[in-house]
Length: 244
Image 1 (cartoon, one colour):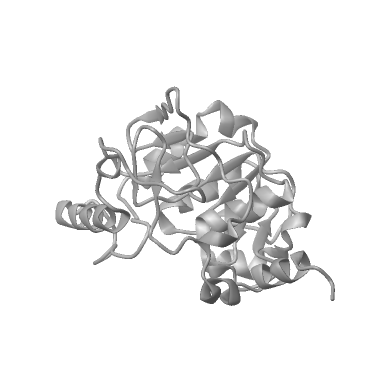
Image 2 (cartoon, rainbow, N blue to C red):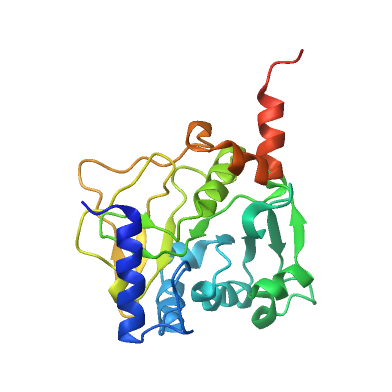
């Protein structure tokens, strides 16, 4: 089995060579693939999407069309603060507010201008999680760009109870990002329920051995530098330590 970095490098290079992504380079990024609008439309036809009232999404360009659709359809949208650099780790975008114009608020810069920073315990229950990916497989294993922030966002939301074990997780990708091979995963990696490409919906088949969902923060997987760079983790660790 290839390691995560080998998979990432292979997919990034293949996408760039095939010219199916926007921008000169997608290395170290969630690929902004051509056809992301078509994938977003397919997601919007899912029953899980139709019934969702609150959606948590990654902030990357590839999922911008889906964030815009969420706001246009009146859904409450949560985006994480980049690199979780504030204790209020999420931005809440409420389409009922006049200043939340979907096309602008779906971008990172637009979200920060009109969104409301919230603590994780202030969030409404999440009905659907949207994750960006570099590579995925049909079992639901997802490989991100390597920063680990998407998994931390999920872990924080799960620990606060706003994301439940049964909350569906979906990712939109280019067909070339869907790999027919086993992919590595660890206990803090969030598995996918649904993969949507530019032309198909794939419901992940976990078989008799489903991948367990993270239940919170796995401190043993975090180094000191990562913890100190995220104010909320610093505070949570402090709160968990015995007094005196």
